[in-house]
Length: 321
Image (cartoon, helix red, strand yellow):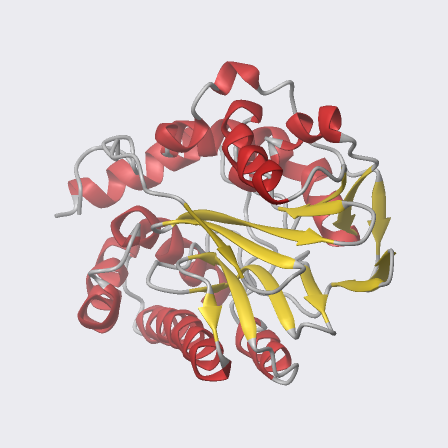
């Protein structure tokens, strides 16, 4: 495990890609860094997840402007994590009319948005380039409970809370005509799943609900765009294996009465052979194991991560080695 806290030592800039999935859909991906999605309708553009700062959002805006000059009318937040939402203000100058989120996401911003922002910035400073450009928390202007359908001209866009997993408010965007799915961090590929605020018991069932949609392209929260049904299923299987192995291992450790540090050692025996090589694994695992132990111990609603709690957990696990 890296001795330097979280990903403070991760300074290597990742190569971004802007991949066309259909006439209406693009994926903005970056070698394991957080992804964004783009939907281009007849009369405007939708951005799904905004990057972490308004300055960083300009890279995505530049890519959008290479393919359309339509206004960016909508921003969708797949969940509340700072790295996904704090770049939203950049889109206001591009014509943004609505920032859309689920009820669960809105409630999480209310409850822990400030703490999450401070925590994430300290964990992974590279992902918050020009952090001083962030005006504050991003608040949705349109909140839905289960499902919202928009028509961008003739293009139907379905925005859904299909189930919990990465957070209690996870939101997906589905283009039924193109059979293209933007999953947010419900699906990861070739990267660790961060589960520090997860509902691990529910996550596999939510993945199966996504599978039942029979997507032909899927943009995960991290990792490359998954094109073709076989690749989509590969991403779903990968994520299901990650979260299931994590929770099963934590339950076994809790049943034996192991300490957190001994649980970490045990979970690594189960996780490292399959996932130890993927992006941000060492960053995520301490947070993942801590949350998995909480859930296995009956703590259903995730405890709030603060910058102080982050450091206490991290250094406690390091001292145990």
